[in-house]
Length: 187
Image (cartoon, rainbow, N blue to C red; front, side, top):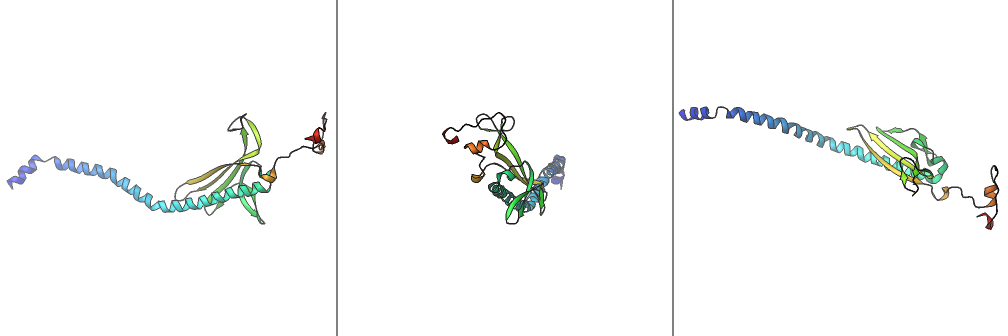
């Protein structure tokens, strides 16, 4: 008994320090462990949402290509759209859409190029044969998230810009102090 009293007297503050160290470690480790546990439970749900969102995004990209191939003049209108099936073809409808908790939008805008033909964000010359497409899908559960894709789309084969090479092409329309000269067939 004398041995225990002697031991207790020499270590009287050690128990208090051990308790403070244990509480400090618990305060650091328990929140980290709980966050990890919570994240691991929410991970599969978030991954499932992401897979569905990527599928909607890929569909939007394919719709862009389909509408572009059909008619450049109706495709090349700036604005925010969403895809709609009309008959057996895709078209763009104004505004964004909501599908099963996902928001989807396709934003079409002009492209400008510098003197070297490189796409620039400001200044430059308007390229009437190229459009920038930003397709995005957003969702809120279990976390606010989004996936986005940026495409640069140009005119398709049968949607080429008007090429005027003959006298008849140049004589169409209204003239103001213009003379059409036929040299080598008008080329």
